Image 1 (cartoon, rainbow, N blue to C red):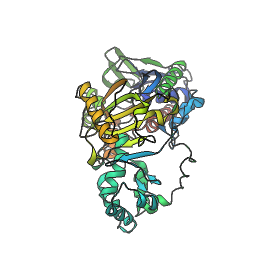
Image 2: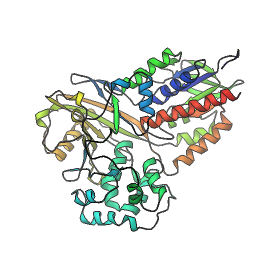
Image 3: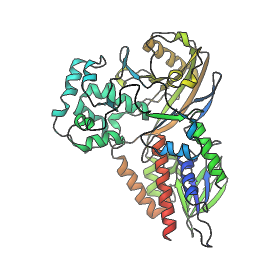
Length: 465
């Protein structure tokens, strides 16, 4: 596209999956671009990390799969040569712990029942809670104003369905407190809430899921762990000509005569466009002097911290109740642990017959635990597992991963704040673009979709010149 003019330069700040996917899209569509990725840490991948554990070559320390309903992650995996390397969970049935493990009722859409009969036969809810949920089609329309997920769902389905189903499912994904989380931040639930008066009636109109065991997979991941997607994308963008610099912490970005100059601890980079794909709060810090209004808003973003404790225990020590892919712990029942994945049951390639791999999540929005010592965190974990499963575990291998301020929290009014930031950036730092988990979706597919959208907008602007 250069037609003899100098190549357009794009700097991408942050080499997590968003930044890598953005570079991939840019260079796939226009190989003439000069793309530089800047990463503050000594590794790429951000919150995706896979390492050997307990004799296994690859066990994820963070996200262990991506949603297939949004195709962007699957499409990227195929584009970087991993199409044949994808696998899906061997079991999908999860449970909720309320005094004991209760299988999640069938026919739920993020906790909203699409049929009432499975809810009626579940022992997870009280009779009163079931009756209240069954009245939802008769409840008058609930206003979407306020954009608060928890209060909306409580009004529609009652407190018990919200606390035992919706909040654990949403909270386990985003380490969130749904009473202080944006309804629009959960697109599936927001769509249901917007379609009609009744959530249940709207959910019934959706295509019916197949019976257990026959459905198309909901999740997928590379068999070598999620890091394999990062590594394959990095190799591809490098082959396409991108420059990837680690240990290059951005200190400021400011307007220049030709566009933007990005200053780092390792040097400065002139560019025509800069993609801000780092966490919002960090971005706000180095925009403080050059884009003060956008920087001030970004510094106000809140993030939750979690701890992932990975255990290898003798398979025989798992009780018979430990079936399926794992379980969630609702907030009224929580002490420390919020969710447990029976990883070696969930993923066939992690089961070696003699040991079980458990991935245990601790901490959430409003309840950080990362400041505790390793010994304390392990003690919390084993005590909660004994409470939940009735078993004393003696792990052969233990791995603790602290993900500090890793989950951006979409407070009510989140998307209006994002729009305000972008409006300020348009005047304070033209050529800057936002992408990543802090803005328009937290999961891996949402991050990749944002990366693609930003790349497409940049290429459109270049083409229009």
